[in-house]
Each structure stands twice: as C-alpha cells, then as structure tokens.
Amino acid sequence: MELNATADFKTFLSKYSSTQNWSSDCDETAKSNDNHSVVSKADTSWRNTKPRPLRRRSVAATSNAKVSVQRGRNARHEKAVRNSPVTEYRTLIDVIDYDLDVLFCGINPGIKSSLAGHHFAGPNNHFYPCLYESGLTRGERVTFKDDIRLACDFGFGITNVVKRVSRTSSHLTPKEYADGIPSVVEKVKQYRPKYLCFVGKVVFESFSRWWFQQHGKASKNWKPTFGFQSDMKLSWDNCDGETKIFAVPSTSGRVSHYQKDDKVGFFRDLKNLLNDDPYVLFTEETKLS
Image 1 (tube, helix red, strand yellow):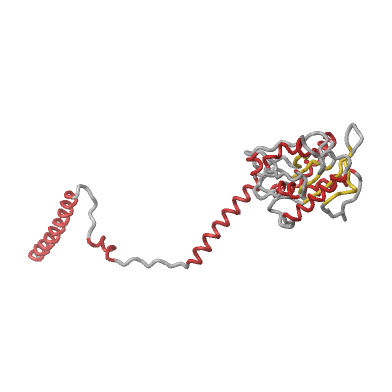
Image 2 (spheres, helix red, strand yellow):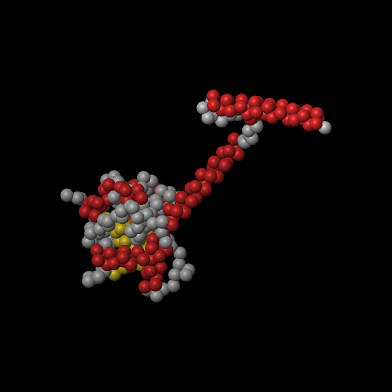
C-alpha cells in the first residue's frame, strides 16, 4: 500500500509539474507581448473557415425597396407640409386703385410669387400670357415684374381671397375661402372697379355661396360657369354704380382641365366686354401718353 501511494504521488507530481510548466510558458508569452492578450491556436481557427455566402437580391427587388422608402418619406413630408402653415414666406400687397376697369381676384400667393414679390409669378402660370394674347394689354407683352404698373398703364388690379402663402391651393381650408370673401367685397365697394374677375373656380364658388346667402337665394342646384355673370353685381358705397362679375379658370399650370388656349379665350371674352362698355376707361383705342 505504501509503494502504491508513493507511485501515485509521483504520478500526481508529474502531472502537476507539466501543468506548472504550461502556466509559466503562458506567463512568459504574456510578458513578452507587453500585456497583449494571448490567442491560442484554437481561437484562430476562424481564419480558416469559409465566409458565409451573401444572400443575393435581385436588382428589381432592391429598386422597388428604394422606391418604397422614398415614397414613404415623400408622403410624410407632404403630410407635414399640409399640416403646418407656411409662415416664413411673406404675403403680397394688392395692386389696386380707384375706378379700375378690372380687379382680378386670385386664390392666394404661391411660394414662387412670395419669393419674387409679384403676383402670378409661377414659371408655369398663364396669367400674363393670357393678358397679352387676349389683347387686354393692347399688344404689349407683360410679365409678373409688370404687375405693379398694371393699374396705372392698363386699368387692372390684383388681389387674392386668401392672403396666406401656400405651396398649392389644396393646402387651404374652406374656412379660409369663406373668411376671405367679405374682405374682397369691401375692397370692391371702396375702390369701385367696373369688373371683378375671379381667377379660379374655387374662389368663384366661394363668392357665389356668399352672394346667394346675402340675397336669400338657394344655390343647391346652381352650377358654376365661367364667363360673364349677368345676374351677379355688387353695389358701391357712397355713390351710385355697381361692379359686374366675371370668372375665368385658374391660370395655374397645374390646372389641366383647361389648356392655355381655352383660358386665353375667356380673357378675350372679358376684353370684348370692356370694349363694349362705355364706362370703361382703358379700351383698345386708348392711347397712353
């Protein structure tokens, strides 16, 4: 029993000695690497492994995913724009004077008009081409930069139902239209233009609802039509006289129901009315000094 114990003890010492030698080797390696971690051969086995093959996606799938993400971003942006008023842009002052031949009434200033500081300044807006091609400016080509002199040179003024600037008229609310009509009516009664021409179906409809309400008439079966409104007039304050009502489609390039030639036709009808009206100051034969 004693010999066996000695033999077992020697075996234990032999194993313990080999373990100590391995530990001392590790200590020496750690010292020689200046405290850098020691990686055994077993830990570096990842270098010999093959990389996992990448999952392939078709070009169409990738493209569709990008388009879907972009559409989502655009939708969120449009919603934010629609729900937040554009307060950083300045509104426009009216081009107006007493006894004008025509006071044009638009919807509201767009961003391009606000930045330019002129009415109907959008690059695709047909307002000034319609003035020129219909003969209302008597052969003189005008642009948005000429809006300020329309009153003194041609007898035309410009105002808007809604003063707030927006990217499109779809960002406006029905309440804004309804609230803006009385202000336009007050300007007409004060400045006494011969004609009030609404530029855009939505503003003409807003005015018509107000007019029917003021005169106690039902508008349920009424349908708007462009051109001269023979049954609608606005009486002036403090003097005898009245303003006649005319309506043309919106001159915005976004409006596709009427092409530019169609819009020019309505402006030409207005011009013919002016020529036949004895109270109009600026006619086709008028010569400016």
